[in-house]
Length: 182
Image (cartoon, rainbow, N blue to C red; front, side, top):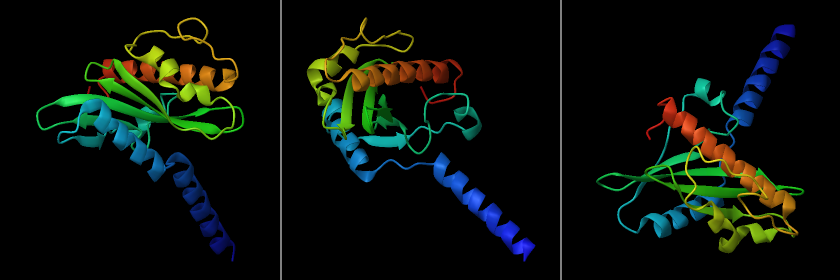
């Protein structure tokens, strides 16, 4: 009996480990990423593939690099860019966002994909998000200094700014350590 309980315990722990470390991106989010990808990189024959980051390397970063969160966009001839799909905190929930890079890892566009709060939706406006366009890996960005603050969306806007800074920092480290196909 103890042996069965022990086996069940290890199965439970293993299943819990797998499900918490490999959180899937919702299909609705990926559909929005694919639609935006066509608008940003063109409607030709695009190939969106995950960028594999070894699991032992993922632990070195503060950014979720699991489950197709880091994507490469190619056409038949070359790499057009990269996409990071993430989650950031809002007042009571999280929101999904994507950062689209060109082949040189400069931000082409930032997009809030799904926002789950009643307040703070201003961070989804292109007027505010365009501040991130042109930022490069290695650039430092701070809310209220490099990125304008938004009254009524302080938590979400600050969170989006911190998340973007973290993505830029992580992309630079991945490139410098030659850990991704950049």
